[in-house]
Amino acid sequence: MKRVSLLLIFLLITPVLAEPRQIPLKEVRESDEGYYIFFSALLELYSKSLGDVLNENLNSTSYERLTSILNFLIEEQNERLRNFLPPFLEFHRGIGKIIEGQRAFFKGKMLSGVAMMKEGISESELALSNIESLEFKTEDGEKRLNVDKVKDKLERVKELVSAYEFLARKKVNAPLVLYVSDENPFIYENVTFYGIARNFSEVILHIGNESFKVKVVEGEFSLDYIFYSPGVYIAYAEAGNVKSNVIRINVTKIPTRIIAPKVVVGRIFQDVYVNGSLVDYMGNPIQGELMTPIGNVSVNGSFSIKLRYERYGNYAVNLYYPGSDVYESSKANVRLVILRLPITIRISSEREKVRAGKEFRVYGNVSVDVPIELCVDDNCSPIDVKNGSFNATLALKDVGMHKVYAYFKGNELYEPAKSNIVIVEVYSYPVREIAVAVFLLLIIFLLLKLKPRKMQGIEMSEEEIKELLKTEETPEETPTVRDSYRNIYFTLIRKFNLGRSTTPRELLNFLRDKPFWDHLAKVTMGHEKEVYAGRKLSLSEIKAFFRALANLMLTLILGEEL
Image (cartoon, rainbow, N blue to C red; front, top):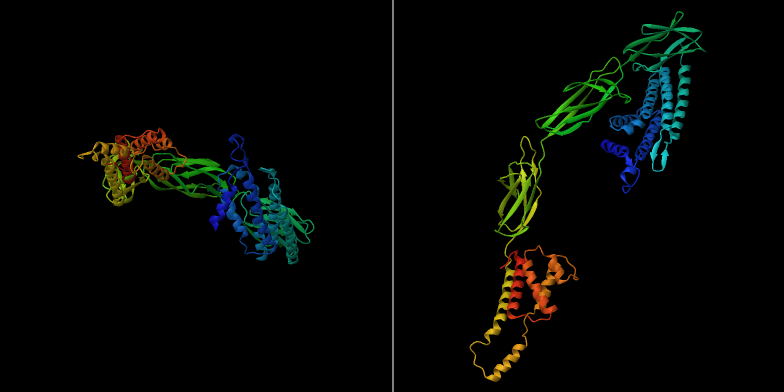
């Protein structure tokens, strides 16, 4: 579920283009539509967190979910996003103080809890005002976020805090009470000490090694204070001989974070860059020195480390910021995946359909001279490569479809590679089709030879000869050129998915690169001479027509001619 949420966040915050793709690139401008939709949805989660405060739901996870999303956004290397993010981080911190103060209130630290909630409300109001002023450029013009719902809940939280404060004050019986807005502040962060002092006009407030005189107004006093060094401080108030309760304040350095990618991919002998930034808990860039595998690197908010490796594998790059007097230390680990150099292999076959046992050649090219294996159905044999080229002669016996490809196993320098796959169909002689073709040739042969034999070795009278000559002028019922061509014509247009409107000449031009073209050309010329020109073919022309037709049919069936 978490991965899905992060994916949705990524899709929403990815910049979108305000204009359709057909518009020239120079006219396309960046749109904030995605940011507007995302931050509108994010405000609902802020509203849910405030709703949990109103319902006094101390175990709600809404705020933790909000924290996870904002941490993800802080790590995004996106300048446009960072223009919108700061007030949302401030609002998040303000709500965090409200929630923490409420928990302190119910744990018995009622006045301190109220003070923290009031400070959180002040920070939230300021942040919400900044959010309300954000402008998002969209296709419909500039838009602003609707914060009315969140504002309403924040007002109701203020009313709740007033009720808490009333209850807390009623429980105060001591003449002098001290409490603070935040018992765990960061250095340089403003905190406020509050107190109730009945029947006193002035108190002395002790904070660490410092003491301050503070006036009491209508039984209450307050003092703003900033801690400049981390540590544990003791604070209490005195008035006359009366001493207040003691408060322990734990002051820490400002948290930092190294923002860097989890994984960086590169290749051997090539520069690999690890880019990132050093920020505080609010996402503000800070300066410092970063300890890296190549030594210390100065950071001015962002950094870039250049690395190079001669061996492939996984490498760990540890980044460490030692901190300073103000900032806490932080670290990050980046995994480098260093790959070998790529190569490309391409192969082709001179035939896609071949008779079983008949030789054919395979040609190939490889971008680098490396030992290649030529594989047929995953059975591989080494092949010589010269100047990036190779070829091989194959003869396949098994009928069916076969996969032919080239493969390189890889070495220390180059990664494994596989070529494209060429499919070769291997066939055997189809007995039925051969029998039909042979039978057809036999019939044609007999028909063509029959007429001359009638004249050999027969004694005839003059009248019989004249009668025979008359019958010779009348053709017998033999296969005609027209019908034979029509049969092969329709066979070809079906085989090659051509329309019936294709003319014989167009068919001939379309099939110019086919192995049977010469035979088709002879058949077409014979057909045109007899059908279109209206000229009777001679006996030798008829023989040539049917011989070409037979070779054409066999080439279609077997892939080779007689």
